[in-house]
Image (cartoon, rainbow, N blue to C red):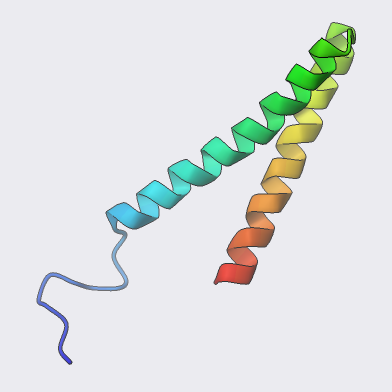
Length: 71
């Protein structure tokens, strides 16, 4: 089977852009959910900021792991 002339696998596609946006959204969702849970627990602003930062790190690690096992 031949590829159509406009399809080159080395060039970025809309799918790559969409998956990048999805990954960023996932990381933000995990990070903000950690901060929201800390706020609901009555934590101070320093603890909430730490929870958001920790959630962003965990979300980044999960996204890296998912890209690693899928690729």
